[in-house]
Image (cartoon, rainbow, N blue to C red; front, side, top):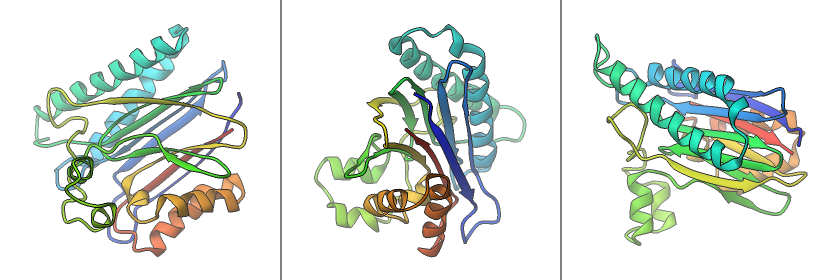
Length: 243
């Protein structure tokens, strides 16, 4: 399946620097890939961590994807590559002046109609069709844990004071939690990867509506514009793969 790619990023309204980084591409065998990282606020080198993670994982994909012949091999490669990226950033943070480094990750590899995804933190992946929107990833965050245990409601989660505290990220600890998800893409559906600068400002249904109502190659910019209009409290990134 040949896919279209649309992407946009913005520093938002409250930051001069954009600590979101992404790369996306198509390989010779029609494999499509996306890596998106959001540098953690409150640490000295969040932006450097996200840039390093994207560059490291892009290199891994370009060098090793040709040797992966099955979905199981792709899954194992993605989990291992993310773990290696975590170690790479963590070890780098122990050297020189970099005292603290951390970044979220959401990465997708699509072959045929199978999208395989790994993530750490609260950057997300969604599957959007003409009639439904499905979040494919589960946030690694304090608020998600409170939701899962029934201690808060969805309404309370929207403005929870600990909303931005994540429980997993690349580069913070020697080992970190990395989750795997997958889905099948049908014609007309869109796989969207985004940072929390978008998902915190625009509801899932509104994101899906923007994608449905606009030309594909305009959709990512429209999503970022909506987040900015809503306040743009953080850096904002969206990458879309359209089937």
